[in-house]
Image 1 (cartoon, rainbow, N blue to C red):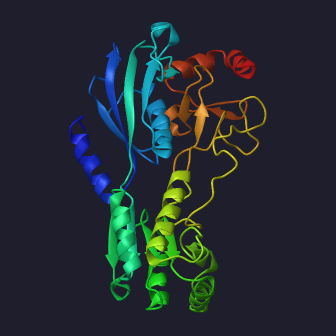
Image 2 (image 1 turned 180 degrees about the vertical axis):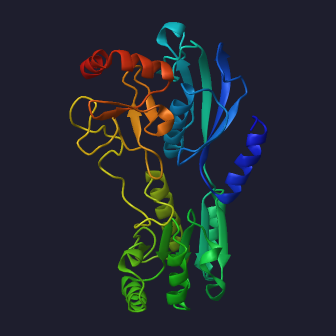
Image 3 (image 1 turned 30 degrees about the vertical axis):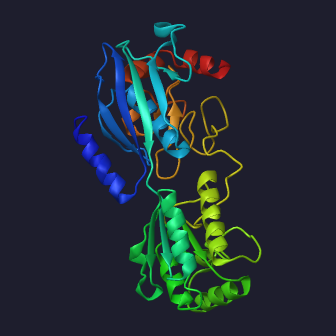
Length: 344
């Protein structure tokens, strides 16, 4: 897929509301398989579509692209060796040393393309219309639907749903909202009314973990307020949750979560390059839906712990490599490379 055709796929992903990163080669130093203007799309799961470079560049671009999607901040990535650039590296550029035999270099601009927030407001009260107007002022996509007409198909996994039917079919509207498995479900109403609605749905067989996703009362607690102020409180809560990264899309066990205190990419512990649980040498989790990652013991690059990364077993531990050259070097002197990795 050439650099221009990849933009068609980018448009399709945008229409589906799926986040991704667009990577573009803005400079190259030959010999390098990546050409200036080469483009690729990297999804949140780490799938790459298009062409950005060979086996040395691709794993690093995928890893950084997934970080860009999570952080929502673009990066300018320089792939090469420090000796190639010396003190000429511009401030703010991310430099990743690679040890490809070609001795080429690439400069890649990676930008996040995040879906426009989609807010579905169920109900036709004055508060609902005020909230829709406020959301649109933030360039969000806001849809207002009558409670009787609302169905789970009206929202997606990245949508935020606010049930504001205010006593007119709350239970059925909330059941449809939960079935959509969106990033947020909120119910406008008092604690007492919310408990009654959730209790009814529990009696109808809705699982407790799904009911636990519902925020009720929806919005920040501002005390006794007008319908306009309720709309502000709801929008403020949504902005706060999105900014903190607490909204979780898709059919997860929780619809939103507080930021975790641990890190998913903490290296496995154990002996040099090994894991007692059978993970790859230097292995770490790469995020939901993605393959595990490992560190090439020769050049130190991060690679996918899959068959594509030329696995080699040594003393009962599987190692992964960015290229056949690194694999060959390790095979000739494994002890030397493992000793150096341990010192580092």
